[in-house]
Length: 503
Image 1 (spheres, rainbow, N blue to C red):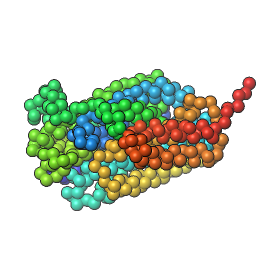
Image 2 (cartoon, rainbow, N blue to C red):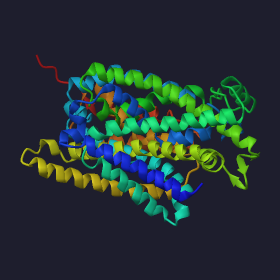
Image 3 (cartoon, rainbow, N blue to C red):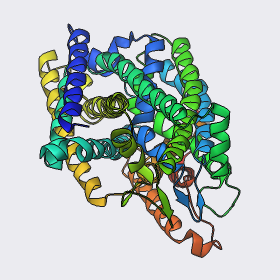
Image 4 (cartoon, rainbow, N blue to C red):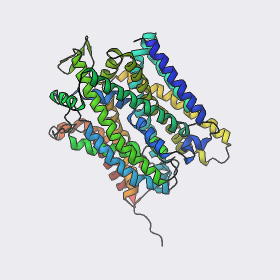
């Protein structure tokens, strides 16, 4: 299919987003940017957050894992236990964290650490969020931009770095004014197109292969694509590790993440925000299952097209299409034009929510938590706005740099890179919030807190690197986040003191 035609649809879609941004950002101010004036509709937030949580990683990488290998067996539906853990994690967010955030009337959730432990813990938590979200968002962005570049922009003679620049500029333009107020609406639009793209691909493959839902599952089972529970205790993919890891990944990457929580706390009241979380979590389980189902169908489709496994590679026309390359290759080269167009629209719909929300949240956190912009009463609204815009542009430039680093690394299955990195960067946040909520002890407001939060991930790196050697072949998987959080908690316990009880 013509790269120029596909690029025309990308530009058209962006112009649609720009129109929505213009409409929603009229009469906006800094509160609109940071928390949407705390007037967002919970149903829109719930639906739009699907796109933010899934991103291009779920759209491309999750289906690609199904026929990929873990050792000598297919990973199959082995990602689903993580989804089960995610659902349990959302219960904790809805009934433990959200009541806390609303009770304290927080704009930045890291203000909780300020109220509980003082400025050092507060700044440390905010900095770990900025690090975590920058790394996670740029990894997601890299995956989708790499697909768009390889299948569209490369054929037009556009260098990769310029592809990144153009797409980041698009995102910057439509988030520049409205912030959260705009994103609530654009995410809703983008989630719709992303789910439409997935649904059309599922229906097309089922019809092309003349399969019903039941017969498709049976055919996948015969190819060993449907295994859910890995029962090898020593494996990174052991299902209990996946569930436990999924719980704490969700608590940390959503409940302790300013990007995700600023949308939740932009809802009018706690009750509506909890409705948002519960509805969203149920939908998320269903959607993730459908993406795994799509993955199995894609592998059946590519095998039907003549692809052959050669060891751990899946070769089609001389190219290895296993993992992240599978869905784009088939959608753009082996399916009808209409499906190709919907795939591209679905892909960029998955791209923008993970980037626009991250840029907005990072700008909000840096301005509020690091610069203390809302506390500076001596600055006019216009001066604060100029500062906020400067920070917004600066993070866009940082995104460009980080994406180029991921291009250099060039990992074939980015979803596992993201989960592993999250284990290192979100662990200290998990430990800090857990220590604040579960204990009554206090911390001295000094740099020792920051040292503990830096040492815990370093210890985790050594544990992960040598776990198989030290523990008889046992490998650390996504439970790394929990280990990191526990080490942070214990370190904080060592440097803490009893709270002074006043009558």
